[in-house]
Amino acid sequence: MSDVVMPASIPESETVPENATDTGVAERMTSYRRDREQVERGILPLATSVDGYSFEFQASLHGLRLRRGGYVVLEAADRRRLGQITDVGAASETSQGEGGNGTSGGGTLVIRLARGAGMVLDTDGNPFHDASVRPAEPDEVGSWLARTQPDRAGLTIGEMLLAPGIPATLDSGGLARHTFMCGQSGSGKTYSLGLLLERVLAETSLRVVILDPNSDYVGLPHLREGASPELADRYSHVPAEVAVWRNDPEAMHPLRMQFADLESAAQAAALGLDPIRDRDEYAVLTDLLRAQKDGTPLVTGPQELLEAEAPGARQLGMRATNLGVLGWRLWSPTLPSLVRELKSPTARCTVVDLGSLDTVQEQHLVAAAVLSTLWESRLSRQPCLVVIDEAHNICPGDPLDELSRLSSEKAVQIAAEGRKYGLYLLTSTQRPHKVHENVVSQCDNLLLMRMNSQADLADLGRLFSFVPPGLMAGATSFRMGEALVAGKVLPHPAYVLMGERVSQEGGADVPATWAAPRASS
Image (cartoon, rainbow, N blue to C red):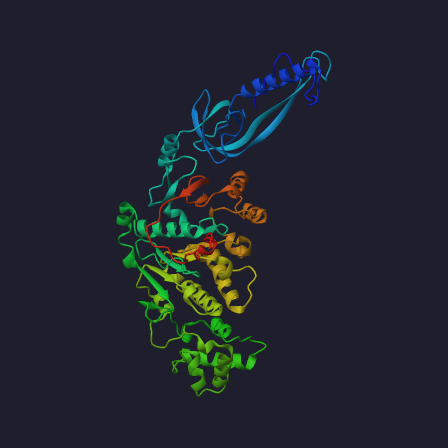
C-alpha cells in the first residue's frame, strides 16, 4: 500500500488537556487538528494487488463512499478493472514529526483512514499497484454481469442491492448444486423462498417437490391481486402445473397414504417398534410385509390389523390403537396415495402441505415417506428440486424420535448422492445450527438473510468457506428482504434486494391488532 504523506510541520503532541487555558497550548491543538484533517482529506483512494485476484486499498474517511459488498472500478496505467469490496474498516497510522519523540519542532500525528480488501471480478491474473479506486456506476456492474451470464434460463429475483436498478439474476443451472437458505424470523426468508420458487416454475421446466410444514406455499397456483402484468404473463402457465396435497377431504388432492406404501422402517417407526426391544411384534410385521411381497392380500392400513387373520396382527392393531395411529386421517385405502403420485407424477410441482396434518408424528412420517420415495425413484434420473422448508424439523442433527431420524437420514443420503441422479436439495431454516451438518455441508449455494447470531454466522462461515468473511458479517445489518447470495447460482457473492412476488402467500402471521392504541373512555 502507498505511504500516507505527512505535513512538514507537526504539533509537539497529540494529547492536549481539554481544560488547557494556556493560549499556546490551545493554538497548538487547533493547528494539530487542522493539520490532521488536511492530511486525512488528502489520502488518495489507492489499491494494490499482488496476485491479480484480490486487492487491498486505502481511502479517506471523509466522504467515504466505499461500502462492504459494493462495486469499484480500479484504474491503473495498464487497464481498468471491476472489483468488489469484501471488507472495509477504520484504521490509524502514527508518524513522527521532524523533531521526533515530542522534541521541539516535531511531534506525533495520528492519522485515521479507511483500509479494506476486495476481489477483482474481471481479472486477467496480473498484479497491479497504486490503482485509483472509485465507486462503480450501476451500468458498469450491469455490463460485467451481462458478459458473465451463462446461456441458461435466468431467475431474476430482485436487484443488486449496491448497484440499484441492475437485475439480480441467478443462473438456473446453479440449482443443480444443493442450496441452503437461512435467515432469522422477520428477515423475509419465507417470502424470498416463495419468490425463488416462482421464478423456477416460470422460467424452467424443472420438476419441484415442496415439503411445506407451515402451509406457506399452498398459494403458488394462485395469482396475487395487483401482480405485475409482465410477471403474471410469464407465470400464466404455472397454476395448471401445481398440485397442492393437503389434509382436507374437500381438497382437489387430499393428503392421504396407505400403510402398505411405506417402507418397512417407516412402518415400524409409525408403530413404535424396535427390532430388539419388540422383537416378537417386529417379527409379525416382517412376516406381513413378506406375505405382501408374495402376493398375499395386503394390509393397506393399521385399522385392518385389528381384523387380520395372521397370528399377532391384532396385537399390532392394538398397539396402533394405543399410540393413536389408527386415528390419523392420513390413512385411506381408496383415495389416491401421495406416495404413488410421487412415483408417477401427474403434476410438475407437488406441494405437500404438512401444516395441514393433525399431528407432528404425521408430519414426520409423511416427510420421511416423501424423501424415501424420491430416493427409491432416483434411477429414473428425472431432475427434481426437493424443497425442505423448516429443515431443522425435517432433517435435524439431533432427531427426537425415530420418524424424524428416518427423514433426516434420507435427506443426508440425497445430499450426499442425489445430485448424480438429478435430485437437487433446497433447504431453508431459521435455525441453521439445528440442521444436520451433513446436509448443510453438501450445499454449494448459500442464500443468507438477516442473522444476528454470531454462533450461527461462525458455523456458516466454516461450512461456506468460499464466501468472504466480511460479506458474511454484513448479514447482521440486513433489512427485511436483503440477502447475501453466493455459490454456483451467481458469478460472485453479492448482496441482493428481493423483488416482487406474483403468487399468493400462505401461512400469514397473526395480525397484531392487539397492539393498537386503546381508545380513550
